[in-house]
Length: 108
Length: 146
Image (cartoon, rainbow over all chains, first blue to last red; front, side, top):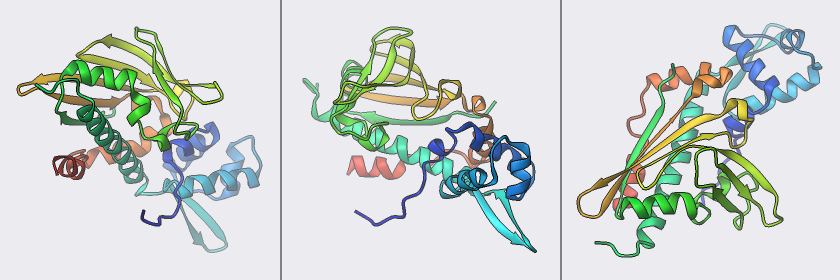
């Protein structure tokens, strides 16, 4: 098996309502942790933790701009979701096919 | 409206066998890493009727909801709402057609849509779909055809 960095599942990442709100805020424009926290009823550390999950899922990236760190929706985020889904369905398809073909009562 | 993800592949068996394998023996082939419990021994149950629950039953007997059957049409059609690892309000839709082909083969056509229900992911998703879904399965196809 190939060694691979554990990447958070985009769907798990978006399973949390605050994280979905954060993605929606960032879809409009890049923001700092404080600017995100201003829109949500949660603390800055909580926002940071959510950003970290979104980052590992490939949905959000960050950039140092002067004294501030700005978070933005990752351009590759959509591709990350797409790749993830393609991989899941591909895997499901192959496993289903192999199992179904090897358990056929009579193949004729 | 966000375009559904569409994939299809052929299986060397009858639609009957394909439908039964999908709905009654999912635990044998569904990738364990895509279950909620990640337990290899977990059962996967499709209740065989419209409105039927789809759930995973762990070895400890805990039942974890995955979705709800919206169309039960053996051996040709199966549709369900799917909310594995998210809450039911974010359910997406899976529609599967098991199409009979000559030579005792079935074409499995899967459409996975309803992305607009997931506000945030809808944003992210729109662009991904513009790139199209061609090529989703070719490597798997090659592998399976071997």
